[in-house]
Length: 283
Image (cartoon, rainbow, N blue to C red; front, side, top):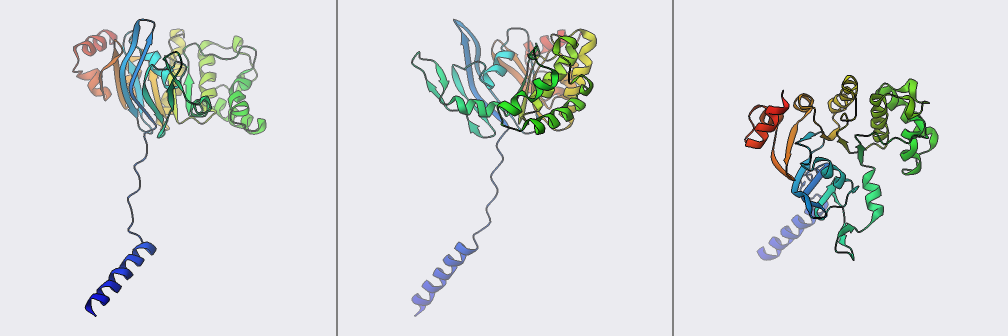
């Protein structure tokens, strides 16, 4: 009798656990971007030598270093404008599937996946890369209409709001040739934002600008940081990097020589090379 009663209790408890299971802890959110052991060579020159980095949502990560250290190549590999030779990349927890090609080089298993994930990676180039034969508005709505399938009316409404945001609404019907460099770069930022990216990638966004135009572009990026946008920014603007970043990566000869909060990188760097670089850049 005691055994039968005990078994009934165990059975009833087991049944109750199916109806009212123990609450489980929610899964930890995926980082917005994760890169592991990224390698890239051009011919015999190894440009990236095993870079690993991670961006949480709302992180602003500035990437600094001397010319030729691999900064731009790193960004271009993240969205597969360059195909890495080795490594792993995940956007919001979804890893990019890769395979070995017949030539012995790594390549995407699915270009559809690449195109889909690219909409989550807004890229802003140093040379703007606007279509010269299209107006500012047409440049901004191109991807939402033709890649994401948004109606033209909805895309225009969204684009005009973004052009207001970057201070270019009155230039929406102008062609790039009639804009200053700073205005072209702000249009490029609006274009990147129009696909609602999870991560913004800025490849030296002020390097092609005259000095008096740099401030207007940095202000737009600073405003995006204050909104909580996740951003990776390759930049030579050291004061800007110090002020806006949650973390800074210092690249040297294809590796992350040092990383940390801006107070460390610009105030008390550990690496001798980082101390030398930030000391020279401060002048």
